[in-house]
Length: 446
Image 1 (tube, helix red, strand yellow):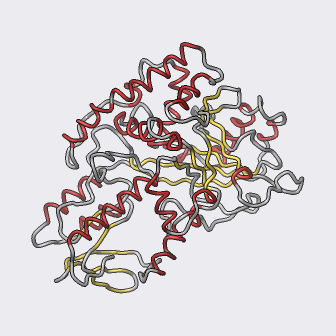
Image 2 (tube, helix red, strand yellow):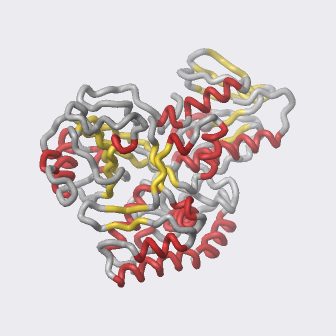
Image 3 (cartoon, helix red, strand yellow):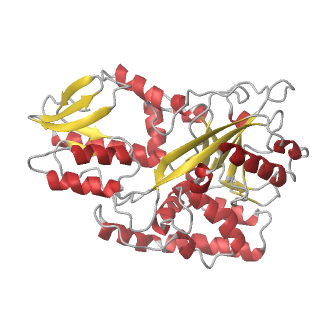
C-alpha cells in the first residue's frame, strides 16, 4: 500500500465526512529532507502543509507560541509572551534551552561511541527533566515527548528527545515551525512519489507483498503472490516486524551471522500504538487549528485538530448543514487501543466538553455522540527507549540494505531519531546511496 503507516484509509463512516487518514500527522520545519523529496516529486509544501509557528496552547489560556522573529530571538519572545506561566517557569524554560545546548557535545560524543551496534543504557526524558517545574513538564515537555517519540516520558530516551529539540528549537527559526497536512496523507507525498518514479522509467507494484527472499546467483530472488522476480540489489523498506521476518528466512552462504544479527535486533523491538478518533462535531470550531489537551486515563486525548481549519477547500464549515470533523490524537496509546471503541469515544467526548468549555461556549454539546470513527494503529512505531540497539542501513551483507524510520542515523551528524517521516525519508535515501556505491553493472534494484 502506498504510504504504509502514513496513508489515506478506504473505510468510511456515514456521519464523518471527508478523506480520512490512518492517523493525524504533524511535521516540523526541520524536516528538510522530507520537504526536499516532496518538491522533487512535484508537491509544493507551501500548498500541501499549513505552516504554524511553534506553539503549545490549551483551552484555559495557557499558551507558549514562538513569534516570527529570527533565531534565537523567537525563543526569547516565546518565553516573554507566554500566558499562564510565572517568572519562575519562564526562567526555568530559558535554563532548559541553555542546558539543551550544553548537552549537545555529550550527546554527540555518545553517538560517536555507540555506532550502529551499541546502544548504551541512558536516562529517560522524565529523569532528564526531573528538576523542571511541574507545569512545564506536564504541559510542554512531556506532551512534546509523547508526540515526537510515541513513548511516555518515563520510558523515553532523553538523548533522542534532545536530538529532536535541538534540530527544531536551536536551528533556524523556520525549523521550529509545525507543519500540518492540508490534504490526505496519500496525496501529500506517496502518490506523487510513485508517479515520479514511473515518469523516470521505474516500476511501482502494489498488492504484491514479498513473502520470501532467497539468495540468487547474481543477487536476490523475491517470492511474491504474483510470482518470482530476481534483482541484483535489494532495499528492504518494510515495517520492523516484517523486515525481521524476511531477514530471518534468508539463507546466505557467506553472511548468515549478519542477517541473523539484524533480524534479532528488530525482533527485540517493542511496538507502541497510536489511536486517532475522528469526531463529528456539527458546526463547532476550535479557536485555532489545534489545541493541546490535559491527558489522563479518564481523559485520554492529547491533541485535537480542527479539520475545517486545515482544508484547502473553500470554507463552508460555517453553514448550518455542513458538519465539521475534529481529529483527536492519543499517542503511546497502549491503554486506549485496548479499550472498547465506544467507551474510548465516550471518554474523549466528555474530556472535550469539560476542557474546551473556556473557549467554546456550547462545548457541552460535545458530550452528545453524533458519530465517530476510531483508527488504532497497533504497531505504529517502535518504543523509543534508552539502550535500544538498532540496525543500520548497512548490515554487512552485499547488495542488501535496510530502510525505515527504525534504522540508526545514517551519519553521526544526524544521529538517532524517533520513528518519524523525516527518519524514514533520510533512511531511504541513505539505503539507496549505499547500494549506488556498490556500482553493480546493469543491475535492477528493488
